[in-house]
Image 1 (cartoon, rainbow, N blue to C red):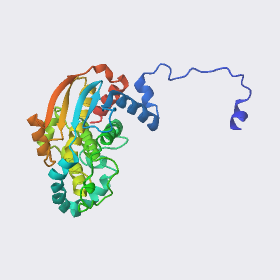
Image 2 (cartoon, rainbow, N blue to C red):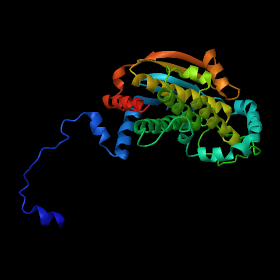
Image 3 (cartoon, rainbow, N blue to C red):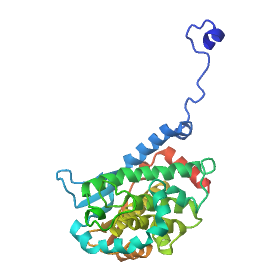
Image 4 (cartoon, rainbow, N blue to C red):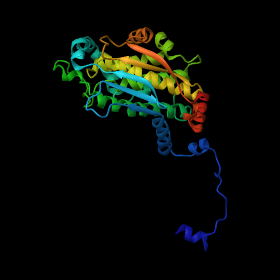
Length: 314
């Protein structure tokens, strides 16, 4: 009614030129609302990464993650019998920490980003693009880890003994790799590049135990404290999260050579700590490290602009 009362007669002809005509893809993306922009970002990332499994069989002992068609992560799962023999003992030891860690564990079931915000200032207005990329990393990890969990279908601790009695509800999907470890180590890797004014070297930063990786370690370990994950689940998740985030960061920085890693989960019987991860990364036995070369043009121009603006926030 307001239009009818103010416009009067209109024959349908135009009377102005659209202002945004011809704007670049980054300007168009910045003008989008959060939901649509998130969908564009997620499609770009999931289009770059993939999960390779043998779909001709109901069981998979090995799964691969690809980037631009090249394999960057290979995971070889442990058997349930191997876990029962070599990993259940850690659950008994870690259970002693439940009283101290309960509040963290409960919060971390749905929020791990806040723990990384203890290290670097993160707010929607001041660090808009850092947050957008970090949250996209979490969603990307979910899209990758869940098909692997489904294919591997490794049993949870509660399936092996009634005595573990987790202090939170055990998820109904497979245990290996740990989603919390994947997401927290991917996030720590991305934010290591942004938060710290130093050369980007995730393996060295893990060995040094920077603040972000110490939080990632604690988040992952808390899942064992809670009784829902084995240490090897966290080791697999850490390898997956670090490798995919490191590869993405290097491509965003204009590099084309990225690390590729294989984790022999079928042979790893140990605990999960930053020290254990450091030793495995250095040994090239439990974790084998090679390199692959990718093409820089798999990164959209607008994503490079987003990355540049995220770096300017620090």
